[in-house]
Image: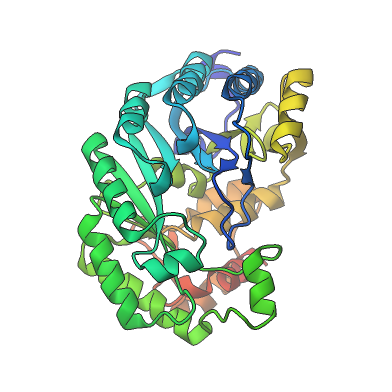
Length: 392
């Protein structure tokens, strides 16, 4: 299929991205429900790299004519990989599809797995942006969150990232037990002093199946209630806005032009391939937009790829209803909001004018100068209710 024969899609201009999931961690954090696994024997990186290459080749054969605009190495802890493994992954992606001249290549790293030589190796491999899992600038809270690093180690890792990459970001988790608005304000202010262009700031959520869920159920961990969480959210917006790091998405803050392009691709409902154990993808195939899911367990994924050439266990043709709802759910997270015309093309029907007028009247959404619909500062904290109302 030539480039001109690539299936058309309303969100084609959002780009084509690759998500590479490295599922291994040094330890499992008690709040984490991601597909991450601890292995006490060394991981056979050569064997896993060969499997990644096979799955990349399989996916590329299904998606000819694309050019990759962003690559994200997530996990797990991708910074546990040797730089040569990262180089092998990136070379395979470039060979399979080709990349844009300004391709964004992000690697997630934990402060405990950062050292200058390794970062030099990642830079040489082609990585041009790193995202550090700092999570807190408070040693007792880091310990409570199950993190293996101290505040001093985290800040040293940020310095190392700054020395090797023009673009870097780090994550913090707030709405932690007993956290006060004053303490969060001070911690966030300190974080911004070390952040060049981007911060990801997530409210702690208690996910079923995690150790934190069991502790919360037993009354041994008490997260802030809705009012306290809202106060912490308001502090987040105020402090970041004042520092020039406005929210471009519910949990992500950046200076103008410094947004994560890969994240934007997801939220603008672009096309992306999910490669590796437990990775999800959204591909536009000849029969339409399709969801893919790979085998979650790393060794089972490896065996499946070695047998079949890929680890995909679910392929779902997305209905117009599902596409419209996903576009709405993802796009309303963005400060720029959604394009109602694109929604109508995806869904097969327009948004209900009466529901729009009601939410406009309540001050929960607003029309932008370009005709888009965006959640307001008042609407953003109740996003799920907005999506349910508009999708109904």
